[in-house]
Length: 237
Length: 237
Image 1 (cartoon, rainbow over the protein chains, first blue to last red):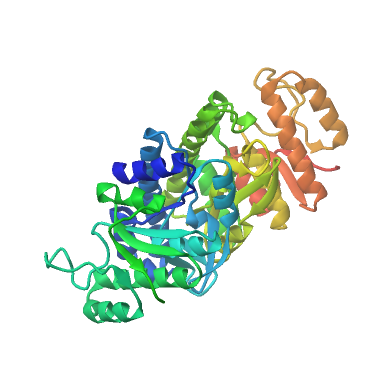
Image 2 (image 1 turned 90 degrees about the vertical axis):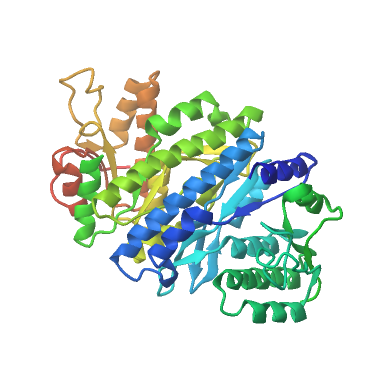
């Protein structure tokens, strides 16, 4: 995490404006699964699940905030469960204004995947970090939307299982179809397909650079600075 | 705290709709003072102060959330630093919708005093629990606004120093003036005067019952249930 945070801060120190969105990782995800929160408020236990998942996400968020503080950053967390209301899974109300004002005032806004109130039948919906990132990129008219992965970008085959797998440098609708076929049946890559679709949406909406990269070898800083970087870039929607 | 929470839940179990707002207590307040956050973002250190104060408030909020969970409640925290944006100290944007939807869905919304973004020069403002409570009471058209104190209500003299001090049963503008004179020079009661003024505003705005009570002897439950309770009631604005 330290390297990622430090690359973000080096870009910010040069005057760059960055919004950080992190996922749930090993903190929120297992609880959301255990309490079946993808089904919403389906039982009395769901209310316990919502509270526990949110507390776990706050703990992860605290780690991120503290890491940025240690490095001299100015983090300002904006908790989606407090700042978004959905309706049937779609964002109905939000306090994006908070992100804008935080940036104006010199803060580094930090959001994360979260359990969010939903006016629809379900009552609550899991709003992923990926969805928030592409939503924010569009609303804030961002130049770049950078997805940081633990591999170098998007592959047609799982690079962890197939060491020879080739990195997709440019991603268009045609390549996505191939990935969808390859991913069918696998939950993990199912998440990746969703991530790519969110990315396409941001690209179609006008975000010029939408890419998937690893943070290794200062690659995140390069991408932020607009230098040549290794990764997958979305080219056609 | 347990007794307060349990009285709230007993009222909720009967179908009552309650929004809980807690203060900063010994968690947020000392940090806000140490980093002079009442002066806004006055130095680089202020950014550290904002982050630390917010983390401390989250810790206190977690205690409150967990206490309600232990008692079988359904707490849903709405963090003001994520859901309010001020301009020159006044609320400019807010996600009150979140409080409404949380209530609709059977949650117990919990807010608290917090450091909040401010579009004005200061950059951040301390938004007290008292201000949030009276703001919410007006926006949600609440029937009752109940301030829970560690004494039985409002006194003309400090009841902790003067055991014979008489409880003010009905509070109007005239009594407030007497309290202001008595409180001049004292910071602690200065806070009380501000609280009373917020209370008056809610009363003028149409909140029928605005009162100051202690939670002892089930007094909070009585006030929530609309039964006879001991305390100070606002009568004239």
